[in-house]
Length: 326
Image 1 (cartoon, one colour):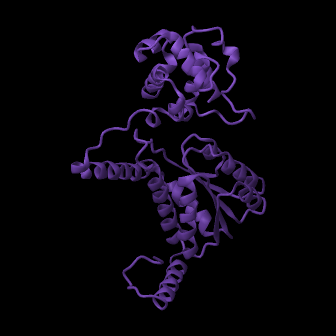
Image 2 (cartoon, helix red, strand yellow; image 1 turned 180 degrees about the vertical axis):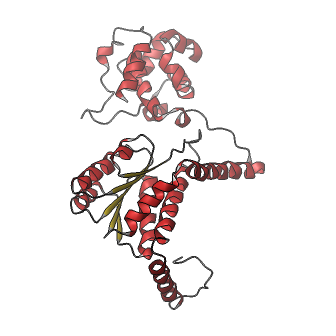
C-alpha cells in the first residue's frame, strides 16, 4: 500500500495554498501511526457540516475518486462548478491540511480497488431477477471449473496419501472464506477416521503448531497465500518436521512453504455486491481431497459413515438417501 501511495503522490499535481505541501501529509495514518484514515467515509459523513459549494466538491470526489486524485485544483473546481479556494476549504473541512493532503488520502483509499468505488455493474431490474441469478451462478460455475482445470490430480493424491496415514490433522485458516473452509475440512475428514481440528485464532494456531510432529499433518488454507497468521503457524510446524498441505494461490509465500501445494487462482468478479465465488473453489478442493483420502482407506471410512448414519437415524427422523449428518 505504501508503494502505491508513494507512486500516486508523485503524480499529484501541485498547486493551491502553501498548506498543500507534501511535508504536511499528516493524517494519512491515525495518531498511533498504524491504521490508515478512511477519507471516503469521512467525506460521506460530513454532509451536514459542509457548505453547499463544498458539498458539490464532495459529490464530485465521491463520484470519481480516480479523477479527484489526478486532477489539478483548477480541474476539480471546474467540474464541481466552484472556485479553487472552495476546493481548498473543502479539503480542510474534512480534516486535511489542504488539497494535496486530500489527494494523498484519496490515493490511499483507492488501494481497495475500483470495484469498491465505482457503481456496480448493471445486472437487470426487478423484472429480470433471473439475470442476477445467472450472474451469481455463472461465477460459482467458473470458480469450480477453475479448480478442475488448474488443480493437479497427482498433487491431490500425494496429499491424500499423507493425510490417510497421519496421526492427526490440523487445519489453519483466517478470514471469511478460509475460516469456513477449514471448518468444513473438519466435517469432511473426521467421518473418515482422521483426528482433525480447525483453528482460526492466530495464537491458537501458533500454539498448536508447536505441538505437532512428523506423524501429523497441517492443512493450510489461504486464497491469497499471504495470510501472515497462517504462514507463521506453518513455519512453526515445519520446524518440527510436520508435513504441510496448502490450498492456496500459485507462486505465493504459502505455496512456497508447503510440502504439497494444491494451487489454483480464481480472479474476483468486478462486482463488490456479489459474494466471492472463491469459497466454492475452496470447498471443491476440500471435497476432492476428502474423497481421495476416503478411497485410500475405503473399508474404515465406509464403516464409520455407516455407524454415523445408523446413530442419526435412530435419534431423529430421516431416510437413507438424505445427506449424511444434515
